[in-house]
Length: 370
Ligand SMILES: Nc1ncnc2c1ncn2[C@@H]1O[C@H](COP(=O)(O)OP(=O)(O)O)[C@@H](O)[C@H]1O
Ligand SMILES: [Mg+2]
Image (cartoon, rainbow, N blue to C red; front, side):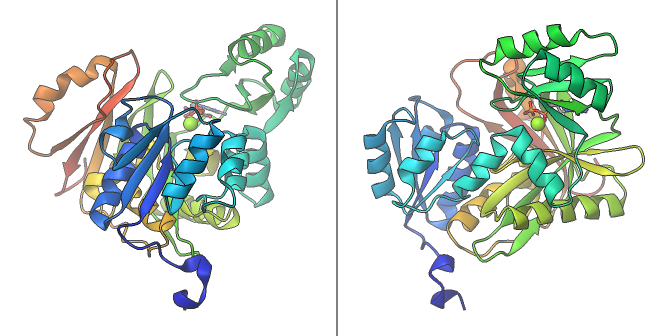
């Protein structure tokens, strides 16, 4: 079946996977691609980045360097990315030269919180109530519609809580708008009703070129200062909630025509409803536990799917708690390497900054709950 269809033709081992982005997600994808026999070529602007330390080849150039992109495209068999804010012009420069997986249309949706929420609601996936706001007056109107408390977010370029302003019952909309617009130039806003959730969970879903899908059990996510700090796998939710969450992730992957892996962030309400918060069309921080606790990690699935290989098993061999090593928490490594069931992952970042993801540790609980 596969052989007759060019789209499903596997890229054979010894071929080269190109990755846009040099961070830890690219690093861990490169490390997972290596046992499958692939070479990896990293394209990123900064020398010495985490991924460039573990790859076969790297190009250090800005994302708008057309010449460097053309040479990169000529040197690889497929291109993927490890961050969703890949500029549209970069994707366009590669288009037609080499397959880009996941496809650029997915980037356009996931770079824009409004497009993302409209897409989700359009396929019957619930989100928090939301409305667009282009200025302080529109925000005031939107708040009357949505109610308070709420949160104002920049439609584009937000991460780790950046570009977000909480709106309490007494917050002045003009001040909230000024705060958000001051942090992100030319920002369009989206205002969301505040979800009084019981838990935040995420599902990592993989989808191959032939449409085959696999999900991992939901992980339960805990943040510190808006930055993911710990993921507990499996999440403490009832089985039907976990199954529902996985089915939503599959619906999204199928309807968005994903090839690769995607992290789907969700809120679980006290009633057991599941609302989708945001999508990341790439390996996700909340899926790092899969490296040490599952038959195949999210990074292996990503390499497999972009290369057109079949997916592997997402079975969990142990329960796990993944802790990000944020800022100087990384200095705790001497204790971590003494723990027999702790798996340490350091990202090779030279400079420690507060809140910076320097590495992570996954603690395995093979004989019972964490
Ligand atoms: N509508 C909301 N209701 C309740 N909490 C929210 C809402 N939106 C965001 N949050 C909280 O803020 C965190 C960061 O928001 P998110 O939309 O995921 O942006 P980021 O791109 O920064 O991850 C979420 O993980 C959640 O804890
Ligand atoms: Mg998020």
